[in-house]
Image (cartoon, rainbow, N blue to C red; front, side, top):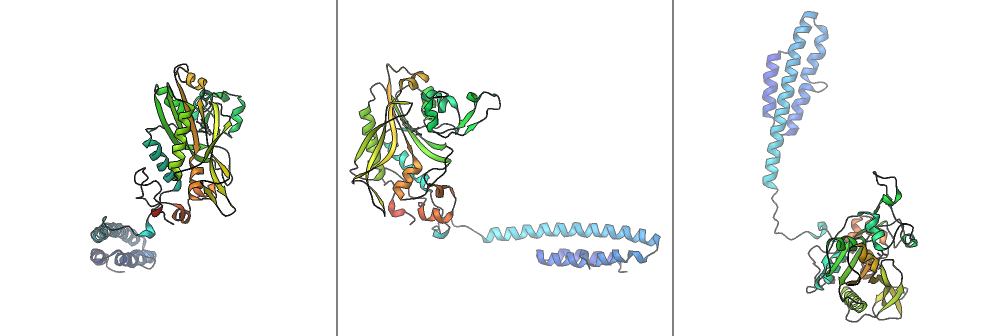
Length: 367
Ligand code: DAH
């Protein structure tokens, strides 16, 4: 059998001398691998007498532990040295231009979000927010849609059980409409109010133009003299700015929403051919949003006196706007996280949307 003390000295010097992880691994295999020197010695213990076996076995176990510890220490040392060397080598010059093949893109929904905020921001609207998980009071009841109101059928709602109550009326919802933020805003603040509330909304729907999660923007203006004429002027300015057109035919059709009276839907002029949809002059109409004068019951539910104040509200689908403006045919693709899609329809990160610098900056389109 090899002299154990000599073997130890030799192995320790080989370990300390290993210049990299690969060399160290070779030393480990030569000592502790299947056919390693220590392994072989352990195998040979069988040939010894009981007394010798006990004695040598003990010494070999100690040797094995010491060698393992030395290997581990050297490994840590080498890894640290490798990392230090890499850190010195891999310097990043953040002033270099971005390589186009690795550059990220702004999602069309984020782009539209920025555009809408830029337009209404310019008109003096503030951005308001509310939670995605709502109670029925904010999502429905205070919006003049109590339980069992037939208008609840207009939306395929995801209800969420309330762990503290068996009563269905206490269950939560993932908000079906950003209109809930109207209520949250009016509860907190007395008029004058001028807000938009962009955000996520949820309904149990799935086809080319519906996804279970989608985005809306709500608008609300409340003051003493707010009129339907103000609503029309505001929305007309919005659609012209949004579609970046000087002229755009619009019309209002009577409609029904429980939280507005009167209620209307706004259409914009367009021309539909088999090949494309052109927004602007043409013989066709395209529905773009819902709106109306805030129902007195909604003001009352928020502690605002409807004899003193009146307001208008509107709601529109951000994803739908993105589809129309950027000619994206299927809504489901928005949420598939396909990087090729994002490269095609996405926007350059530094193209900021502003009323003065340009909204969509088509020159910067990644197409
Ligand atoms: N909340 C409505 C929906 O999701 C959209 C809407 C219509 C909002 C009319 C409004 C409004 O504020 O006045 O279908």
